[in-house]
Length: 192
Image 1 (cartoon, helix red, strand yellow):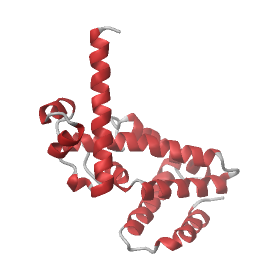
Image 2: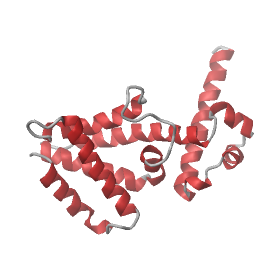
Image 3: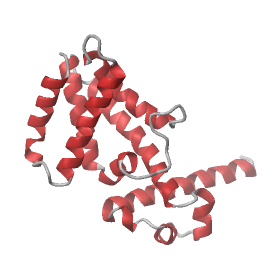
Image 4: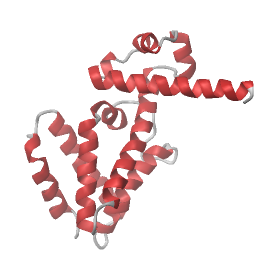
């Protein structure tokens, strides 16, 4: 391995460590607890080293969002692949999405609530975000109904899921009724 390859590998490993530490800290104490000073202390590198990878917290949130979007897409695809038929796929998608949001609240916030400096719904949207939407579209597009644009239907269904996730987490909706809400959403919104 050349010196250049070794340096690049070390740089990539440091970036992974920074992102993993930021995620860990955010999940344990919230995003307000994630500062460059605390990250530098936890990873045992100086703040200038941290800044050589990310210009600040915003870029770190963006990196967490991209990583999380990839994980969410994998979770949705795994859930829908195991389901038989459109209704089962849409139900599995909804449950996987809500489970991801519940298990990873800080990551979910990085993807959908916080400013990570990422472009959404544009030509320059990063690929992990496009792929996360595509994971939803793959199952939802088939149940959009005649004359309904699959992408618009997916946006509406996603908006409903996002509302359920955020309202439940905020204590505005009782979590014990999540299953009933998913069934209502699937039965009333999707054309099955």
